[in-house]
Length: 357
Image 1 (tube, rainbow, N blue to C red):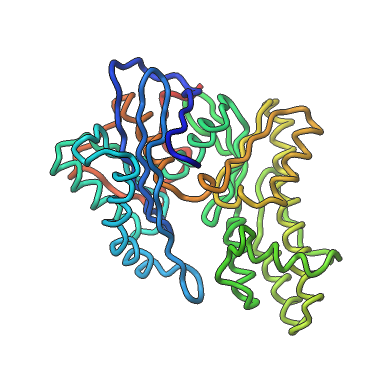
Image 2 (image 1 turned 60 degrees about the vertical axis):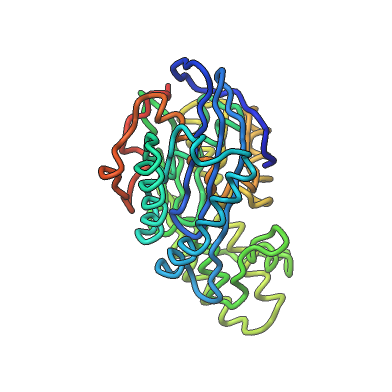
């Protein structure tokens, strides 16, 4: 997303005089990011959104290595963000940081930086729920007020709505998240990392090798999903395929279609249950083009509005932390640096958010 773009806030916030510059820090997992926004007259303008991603040479994310990556790049990312925004650190009015959910070592890097800036420069400090930030930035950019929320990423898969100033989870994964399913499968069969090549996930590239379909375990329980059985079965068949590219492509295509269709089923059920007229797709997996096409299809079928967050904000980024930090700050959600605590297992539905319906 290019900087200097401005958006009208779609939620209710207290009126303020003058402008506010908010500095947001994201470090929950593989990405260290800094976002800077300016708020004035109920509009948010993007000043900067800079990030650096840790990419393991093999295997999944190693928390200690990821946190060391964040330490190594943090100074450069901060300097680039400030330069892009055209401000100095003293011009910041509010510091926001993701405190969870996420990987402990990674979370502590961002928290330490935010505490330092807040204490040294005397700036208000705001803790942000990473999952809520994914939703709020989607609502802002998509101009949505009360959508059915579908959050899919490496660490989360859930369906939620807002009610009585809380996020209510209607359904979620009972074991591994959708993004973790795709990453684990492609890693175990030897076609990743890297997971993203030319804008496509490794599963998408593999799926192009065949258009055939093999039935795989399909586990939906009400509005909850389970992907572990699907992963186990797909890995077994893939290993039996050996180096046959066509057979491997068939497994990749079958895995992707089965997983995505499970998600679509629970989304349809949730639409019928809630009567929502908007669907918001957020999280890192929201950038998958095949998944987006499926959502566009059900949106047309049910006559509802759909918005999928674009790739530059679908994944982890500092911009979403800055914006959600602004909302928190406007409602007085401020902590002292010594009171800031990271929470690895922080849930979406743990707190009240005053700006919600």
